[in-house]
Length: 206
Image (cartoon, rainbow, N blue to C red; front, side, top):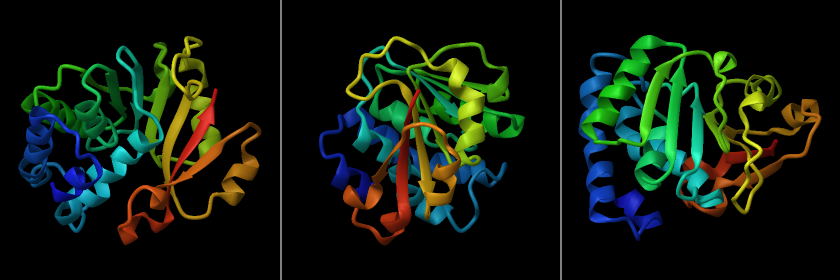
């Protein structure tokens, strides 16, 4: 929690309480359904929660924003972002049912009424959203192909509607395949921990 308070000092008491509950909830559920690697559960706040919140350093979601989290796994980045932006709506999807059940249990325990969790493949979704977020589920070019149809034309943020994608490493080759504009935000510009040295948010306007 110290990490979250360090980089997000203006949280409400309710937000701090919700972030504080996450460790016990994830330890409980991860013992039953492995949604986070065993070694990572000890670094939950740095490698999962704060990493997810890197997206919030790039863009603050306004009230009424609709966000799709594709391949949410254990609920990242969707659940931390839903705590931070309670007036935005989050649709968390994954093709693996047992992971979605854990996500729904955690969202319910945290009383996140702005989260909907669903077992479905992104390609099957018809709804529209201002932004799609995800944590490196595949290379960016096929990912764009999955979700391009779901991006709303109703743009009301400082960034045009599109994808905010958490990635690591050298993206040069991957971006050479992508036949459209993009921008990289280095998370090391926002967070000083060593883990973030190679981590990025890739923004693709659509």
